[in-house]
Image (tube, rainbow, N blue to C red; front, top):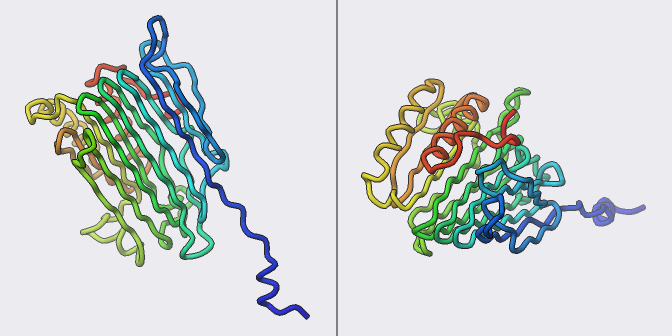
Length: 297
């Protein structure tokens, strides 16, 4: 009779994804009806890139798809995007990213995001929600490198649990590292870690105070190098936040960019406020006051 250890050794290894998307865009050529031209693209499962035609007067479009329908422990996804001088691009996710329960405590989902924009480029990074299912374990690193003359609008949303069906994120872990550089110089970094008694942390008044969703937004323009260059925009952002009484949020200027944060107990209300802030920032940067069709629902 085969021992229990022998049976375990014969169990098949779980299939895991290890891929992503690497793309590089240059400035549009004369006569092109888009904001950038594709120079290089490499994609491997579970990453996939789509290039739909943009609306007239809008940046070029890049839609990122996770073909597996979500990620789980052991999966690895790397997204790398480079804009050369003068390229104008709006990158967005096709749908919310789902992080499923990991099978073991040491089995994390690894996500790496690398964004780079050269002088005169416009980089718009608009993912949809990343939903952490109960038991999910995510280790994510986002690196952003902007030329001092580049402009960027970069966002992120996290939802703790499948709230609509009553699930809460009570077991699992999150390690989220963000780094922002200007011409290679580190100007901002942040590490967020959630582990242990997650329910108590999300409920604590000095923590999330009952919030189950959070959003962050980075808005960078050359004129933000001085405080007077973003005074009016900060006032506009804070006025928008004051209209959403069900959320906690704030906006501030750091080293050449604006950082905005939102916390909410209702992911849908947070999403709506995030979209309103996004449209406002786009308008201030000279683009249409709209959201992509894929993002609207």
